[in-house]
Length: 314
Image (cartoon, rainbow, N blue to C red; front, side, top):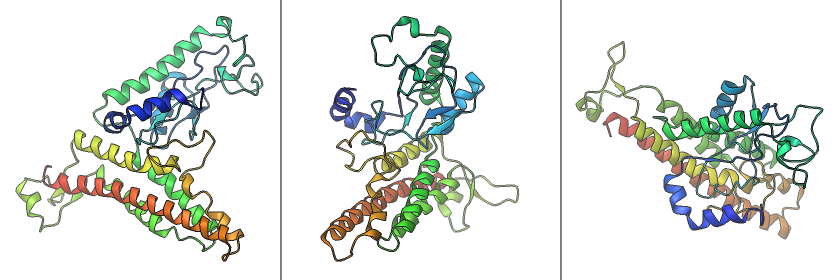
């Protein structure tokens, strides 16, 4: 944790390209196996990893966890390269047996000299380890990555709609909202066969499959193509959904809402439009809006390329 967070930021800086090109996801393991920590009602998960995280916890504990958006804690230093994250603190002590601390299952001994081996519960440690390991196994071995880029786009859309309304006409976020809406619609078409226009000679030549009515349909993309698209979308959107400074720097370790670069949009309505503060802020927000639009465009291009390529067997 020194430097918030010096070790992982060093690693990200030195291996940025490797992370961007090859890393599927980042799993953070923090304070597993605390004494009496049998409550799994809340987990840390990005929007696109939440379904996987909740499913694994339910399979191994029978509990239905509520996903909680991560912030820059627990060495969340890999959003710049566009890497999804899953888990951090996992098991907690039940309500009524918690202290106002951040780790060790919310035991009072966290980060004290009393945090010794007698504060470990072997059964809880085994359960926590199984949860982390099963999630890692599925991320590493699934034919199609168990990530949901549509959930990531939806989280950003909800936040942008709220910010647009609260900006009260002082900042137009419709360009970003429109792109992300188009992205969600395109993502919804990837997972199921789609009708092919009769004029699509490429699809016809490729021997496209046909539905029950005899209409030509695009085949679902192969796993490698799907995985490439999923990661391209996540790579494009994650930096703007989690950072202000961009892909090559690191934001302060403080909580932040989705699309933090636009978080100050509501402030415009409270400032005199002819003031320097208003003009500087609006300029900064326009640049951040442009950043979101560009990211959504890259993600949309990846999805459209996948949809088009499936018709030709690409």
